[in-house]
Length: 344
Ligand code: DOR
Ligand code: ZN
Image 1 (cartoon, protein in one colour):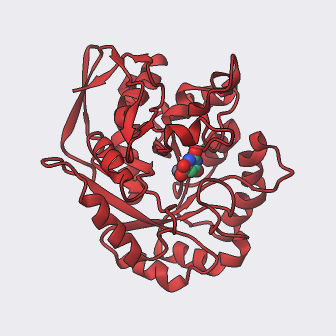
Image 2 (cartoon, rainbow, N blue to C red):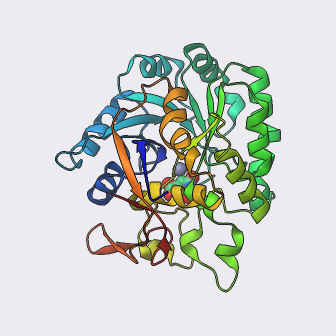
């Protein structure tokens, strides 16, 4: 198959940042996707519908001429979030969900929720209004090994949460383990998961064998190959519980290649081609469209896109570096490497 045409995909998990960063991130993402869930972990975080509307305006100001892009906004869940804010989300035309970071789990998560049981009143409202709760699913206790943090979250936080709120609409973001995939499979239709390109294409050996490769470092961290294989299986299974969310997360080259490097892979410029590469590697390019263009929209209750994009089965070299901020550089995921698909 040399060419495939699919309904334009959406990215249900992306980081655009703010200010000067938008000059890079918005055009990169808008050329690939029709809609994107824009993550709220700015400094300070996007905590109210009003702040989300203002952030959306700043994003819209950077959409290139002639490109249609519809940023879907998300609030940042804090210990202070009120049940009334959930009603405002429900009434909003642009805000679709709320994101819960356990405090300290990842980049700019210090204002996250300190103990999920403290915010059950808000979660009750989310369940009632059927507003999706997006979860960074890792425990943060210092004594828990970084490779076990997602699995421990399932047992210690997610199971009790769903027992208490069985109809809560919930997305377990960027899943990285067989246990998380299995957990999602065992739940009702109200529970779904996003999967990133890096967790489909790579495992921890890619990051750690033959020298540490900081551009593969993201959170949740890449796991062993068996988990990568399970993620590939579920992503390409045609099960609508699993859909595209890049977690494209820009950090400058200096911030990544550092004694204390930041977590995040910047995949936005070639995201759909990276997913195509992963699906093709297991002979399931025919399942890409459901995963990339249908299942996320269906879960969020938004209409499917109607315009199409075309991918050609042709080699493409990912740029080694891109301009970012004022005079800085950003290294995209899989920089300098050749992939077999190209979006035209
Ligand atoms: O690798 C990551 N980077 N994981 C996250 O959860 C946050 C993100 C970021 O904002 O940089
Ligand atoms: Zn993220």
